[in-house]
Structures are given as C-alpha cells and as structure tokens.
Image (cartoon, rainbow, N blue to C red):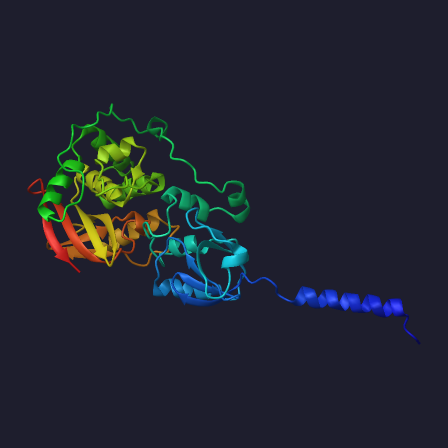
Amino acid sequence: MKLKFTHVLIFAVLLIIVVILCIDFDTNKITKVIDGNTVELKNGATVKLIGVSSTTQGKEELKKYINTKVSLKADKSNKFNPDKDLIKGKTVYAYVTSKRNKRCLNSALLQKGYSELVEETYLTDSLEAYRSYANKGEAEREVTPTPTPVVPIEYVKEDIKLPEYKMPQERRHSTWYSDGNLNVDMLAEACDFDCPYTRSFAVQLASRASGVFNIKQVCEIFDYCYNKWSYVNDPKGKHDYVAYASESIFNSLSGDCDDFAVLMASCVIAIGGEASVVVAYRANEAHAYAEVCISNFDTQDVLDIIKARFPQYTIDEIHIKNHDGKQWLNLDWQASYPGGPYWEGTRSIYTYSTSTGEWHWSGKEN
C-alpha cells in the first residue's frame, strides 16, 4: 500500500510539532543553587533574591526548587532587561516566584525563618510594599504592581483611643553617636514611654492579654506593630534620624529599624517590662532592634506562648541572648515574631533598668 504524499507531509508536520512541544525552551528554570539567596538559571544567568540574607537553611530550601520554572520580577530600583540581562555571566536581583505553586521564594524563606529581611541593599521598596508583593499571587501582582502608599491608621476603629498628640519640644539628641554615653541620652528622649500618647497605645494593646506583665502582652504589641508597620527611610544626609516612640505611633507606625526598636522598647517599659535597644554592626551594614527581659519567665512557657500566638511560622526554638546577667528575647521586626532569629553582628547594647529608672550602656559584644 503506497502512502500518499499528503499523508507523509501531514505526518512529518505532526512529528515536528510534537518534537517542538517536547523541547523545553523556558530558560527561566533553576538549575543550580549557589547559596541561601542565590540561584543559577538554565541559561547561566545568576539571580539574587531581593531582600533576603543567605543562610544554610535557605540554601537547602532553595534546592527543593531545582528544575522548577520560575518568573522573575525586579525591584523598582533595579530593573533588568530579560532579553539582554538574563544571560550567562550576568547577575540580576529579583523576586522569584515558582510557576509550580505560585510561591514567592523570597517570602517563603522569611516565613519559614530560613532567612532575614535585609535592610537597605537592593530593597528600596518599603517593607509594606515588599510584603504586599511577596504574599500575593502572580495574577494579583500584575494588577497592582506599584507599592501601596502609607495611609493613616484609624486607631478608633480598631478600639484604640489615644489622647491628642502634641509634638515634643525641640530635642537635644535625635541620632546615633559614636559615643555610647550620648546614645544613652538620645534613648532617654526617644523612648517616651511615660508620654500619655505612647503609654495609652501600649496599655490598650497589652490589655488584650490582661494581667500583670506577661509574654502574651508582648506578643499582642509586637504583632500589631509588625503587621501595621510601613518601612520608610530616614532623610538622606549626614546621620540617622531616630524618632520618638510617640512620633512613630502618630505617623501611622512608619519609620526604619531603629524607630521600630525604640517603639518596641517604649511599649515594653510602659507596661512594666524591662527592655534593651541593640545596635549591631557587620562589615558595612548596621541594624537596630529591641529585646525584652524574660529572666522571670520559664523559657519553655515563653516558647509555647509564641508558638500558639504565631502558628503561621515554623517555630522550634526562641532566640535569646544573655547580658547584664539576664536573659533577653529578640523583638526585631526582621525576625517576624518575638524570639525570631537574631541579626548577627557586633552588638552595642543599651538597657533600661526598671530598678534605677534609667538607661545605661552595657558596652559592645560579639
């Protein structure tokens, strides 16, 4: 039986179509994991995950996505050309989303506690914009790709009634100094826990877990402030600007890392706790965060309370430091929950003592 030419031609065309369909032309596929925040694509391009640090756990997590097709989205300050920049030898910075499960890998690492949110670097979008992007599905991001502006918080609608806010008089100190003793004076001004505006805010949040000072109250304050916080840079200039705690509250919970640290410390002190503010350094980076003293609590009870209050995170341990002969629990917004991983570096520690009612500098430690 002779095959007609048209039959042979149709068969050949179908065969070619099948071959083409079987060939994987998608070069945006992870083929190698370099470290905890860096992957290599099929075409040889290197991709750095925006805003997350490199950790051993992060590297192991990213290995699960080898041979996974991904979509890339650049930060607004570091756009790249997919046709020219996604080539061997080039490095781009991006939010990386798995096409398999629509999960943003940047966000996944943070939520699992396998990384830290890196302040500054290539993340110039606000913290709120980053969260908004990282936690949305691909389709929703395409509809709302621009950051959401900071909007005033209507505290009254959230059952928080605050007195009229009056901006304090001109400050003597509003920045970090190389002299630790001057930083003590600065924190004494900035941490205005006894200001009616700040104390009212802290007390009303803590009252959601009423009683004498306890870890549940700390969790209520941290969770509210963390979820409402909008990251906004300091003015560009010669030095940092450290806001009053009351100022950050009035500004709809906006500011940078040291503003959040001052707010956390002030709220803890306002409800009867003991707090520290830590400034940490490594290489050319610096970061600030707060701690709360938990020496009077059982650490297992603290862990159980935090695990129950923050079920969205995988929490197997709480991170504690020892200084001044006491135990201190991490309250860094980069940690996402009380007791989350520390931002490691050389620490300069400032502690408010409830016995003396004053701040003091505990010095530096690694």
